[in-house]
Image (spheres, protein in one colour):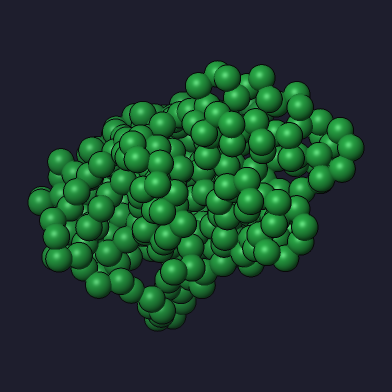
Length: 331
Ligand code: ASP
């Protein structure tokens, strides 16, 4: 029987319901996992560790490091890992783990739920059982298991606050679908080299979402606060305003002057940024802007956070950002 480690980090899946209001509270639900343990033990030999207990909106890069280290320390003893996590920032954690766990040859499956495990009509049991099942199969990557689907972690984004189908991977098909049978559609071969955990992330990042009426000049003073990269959530294929006081060009020039990396991502979830299509994109290219291509915002941000912390050579950072390093964008 496969050995699976369940790493608990909190989230709704582990929360209790407040009796009077019906609202979820961040109190840990102590016996939730125990109740379902007999079912899980029919699938695999399970051990669990409570790493911390947080609403995932409080999860920070230091917590990604703790999860990555827990996987590294237990890598030899287990065949797969299930990370129980809140849904709000699950896609960020999945992306971050995918970048810092090099040569992964075992499944790391993140899951959570929209309704706590202790509630009768919760989606938690189904997600957890599916995640343990998938963690005992040959997935050599970080994945998100939710509502009968397995997605590549760094392609995943939270799409719904209320639906049980909370996640999608807009630019990559699900790795597997769970119905009457488990239909595995995509696997990667195990790495030849041993696992290498490089759990480092820079927090010197600025993320800007464009909106009509935005005055980019207001953001220029922020560039002198130690920022090393700006991820811009632009329109469509990577477009932005280029006229009057709304023009983004002076802001990009200010970044360029300070050797700050600039990444152009898109507010559109499907398809890829293309900085050749329109005039603004071509200006961006000339100013050294990097395209996020078909990456999710979560992947575009965490990839830069990781590369900035791991490498010092700007050419290397730029080169690696432009390539798929963990299946996060088209090759
Ligand atoms: N706020 C919760 C969290 O992300 C939501 C959830 O788990 O669904 O921890």
